[in-house]
Image 1 (cartoon, rainbow, N blue to C red):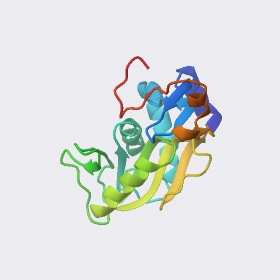
Image 2: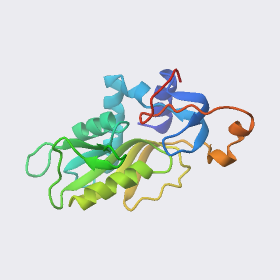
Image 3: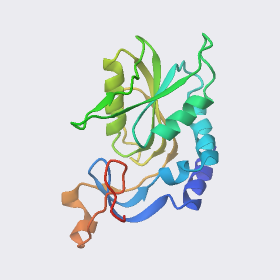
Image 4: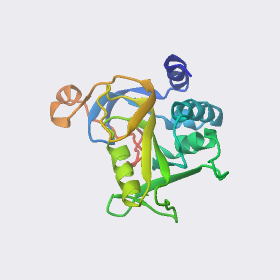
Length: 202
C-alpha cells in the first residue's frame, strides 16, 4: 500500500483531526491522528495490517506485541498477515498494558518464550515512548525484539529505537512542549483525545 493510499483512508473516515491536542506523550499539537476511527472498520484494519506486515517478511517473527490500547487492533491484524512459524505454530498477537502504577506490563496470562522473536507494533509514533517501553518489558521477559512498526510516524524521522523501524506513512506534524506551545499562548486549551485519557466531548 502506497503512503498516499493510506492517508486517503485516514482522511475519508475523518481520522486526521485539527484543533489543539495534548498527546499521550504530553506534547501539544494542532493535529491529531485518531487511528481508532480507521481501525473500527475491519476491512481497513486488515488492509493496513497486511501492508505493515509486508515490511517485515524478511524477518523471523514468532509473535507480535503491542502497547494497549492503541496498538491492539493493528497488532492483531499484522500477526494475522504473517505466515505461520517454521514449526507450524500460528503467530500470536499479545499486548502489554498499564498496571495501577501506570507501568506497562504483561498481564492476562501473556508471556514470551526465551529467545522468542517479537515484532512490536503501534498505531502512531510521536516520541516512540510507548514502543520503547514495550520493548523493555519484552526483553526483560526474555524475548528477542527484532523490529518495530507503526501505521504512522509523525516524528519527522526523529524516532530512535534500538531495533529496526518501519512505518507505512511518514507524516510530519509539528508538536510542542506545553511551555512552548503557540496554541496555548493564543489562549487555547488542549484536549486529550488519546486512549489513556477519559474523553469529555473532545
